[in-house]
Length: 366
Image 1 (cartoon, rainbow, N blue to C red):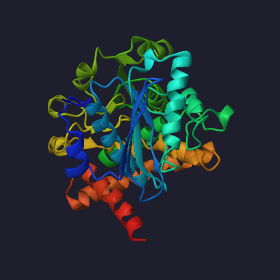
Image 2 (tube, rainbow, N blue to C red; image 1 turned 180 degrees about the vertical axis):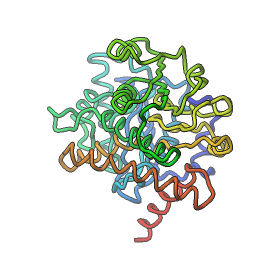
Image 3 (tube, rainbow, N blue to C red; image 1 turned 60 degrees about the horizontal axis):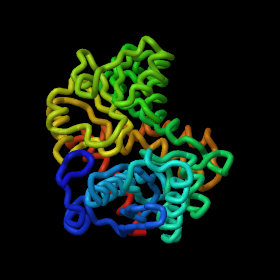
Image 4 (cartoon, rainbow, N blue to C red; image 1 turned 45 degrees about the vertical axis):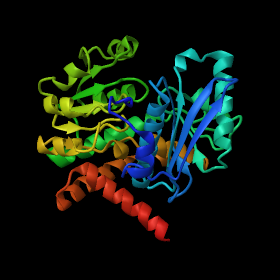
């Protein structure tokens, strides 16, 4: 049995016996009338209520869904800690094909999901993720007040992908500063794999900064949306072709996780990896493989934190300028991680973990 990255999984072993476990709570949710089957994983509430999105995905098995929820929730603890938020980490996954749930059927499922989140009494705050949208959070919020990522018409901040892309761009600027001594992407060739909700905003930032951009996506319409507006953008046939592109400076994985594995790292032509996708490292040890090839890795949960910064702010009365200012600090955080990695003689992913773990440990001692 494997998860969405293709790796073998044993969810219960991960939860109770692995260093990747240690979660405070895992809730299995079911509503047969609506077809809801969901997993809510709360990794930590050391810094505050767990905050993380809702992924709607056609998992191959319930076991794979649980494993993904565990992995994503843990990542959110680290992301929120390094983003300076007073939130722990959590994540929910709804098992199923989101395109198969439309109209009234989707509404009933989301209302049932909202009731499930509400039953946790605020220990978990939900938002959008892959397969869910602002309109979905508006529905969830009808049953659950611990819902963010809602539309402005319903008291929310709207699409969080805008600031997610902005934060990734700041991470790229920091990577350029660290590696090449200049924070601009002008003249750099950047490959973006996945130009959906976040990726197409990232492309706009890159073009505005003077980068050469190469894109790929499994959806032709996502590619056309960009090339019709920006015919100067090149298109790779698929991700395998993109990572082998000659002269590529930066690779930005912006789709699902597991993009960096033994096979892809071995052929990657880029000098930097900095993208929006969660859980880009397919398994422990990949970060060392990147370092051994002198590829600078900007940890995903650091650079893609713009979205969670936005939805967290929504809980206190959303202010876009305030959120953008916080997301701009991703530049400084990324540079600090690279400096810690150099001083400690470890990969940036390990350095980021150490900084996040220290903040969570300090909170528990208070």
